[in-house]
Length: 122
Image (tube, rainbow, N blue to C red):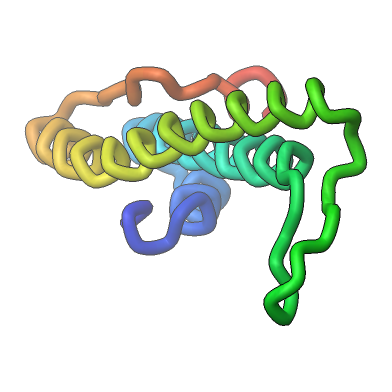
């Protein structure tokens, strides 16, 4: 379910479920999707801050608000974060299959690399 609804589906299931097994699986899915959304926001921010210029109507326009060496660092970090985001998005599909199979077999599966946001704050 989380594969098609991102963090909204697991959040709803976590909020309305009375079954501890279901809540635990929804919590892990929610943690993973919140982690991926945070990574996307980080990536977009660093790429935009690191952008040197943009072409509008065939003319290059200076875009960066940062000094030249700093915007280069942000560009490199943004590209690395973009690579990590792409890996996380592809992992989401694999994780959905593994989590589904583990839930069918009756066990709870914790997503590797997910930050435990729900466990800490809720």
